Image (tube, rainbow, N blue to C red; front, side):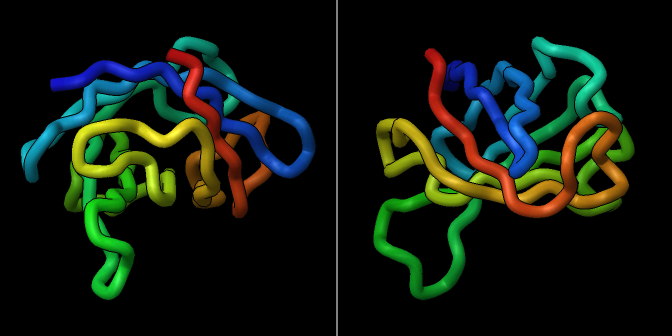
Length: 113
């Protein structure tokens, strides 16, 4: 599974980095924060998905906390990757219950490595 590091930012200029292991298929991957204190959780599972009607080969990423996928996602990144390669940047969203020193709602992300 491919490994990536992304920086996620909010609308107020706060940011943190996340290391991700992203599955190639419908498998479950993982994530962990590299900068602590911005969001409530430090690690969890992730899963790629696509909305019906989206451009072929564009995949979004849902982040889940330690309570697992049944508890619902807390952070998502829109159009993170195509079938084989990650995009350089994009947008997403984070829910209120996940933030500590970070603004809930709209986020942006950029590929670091």
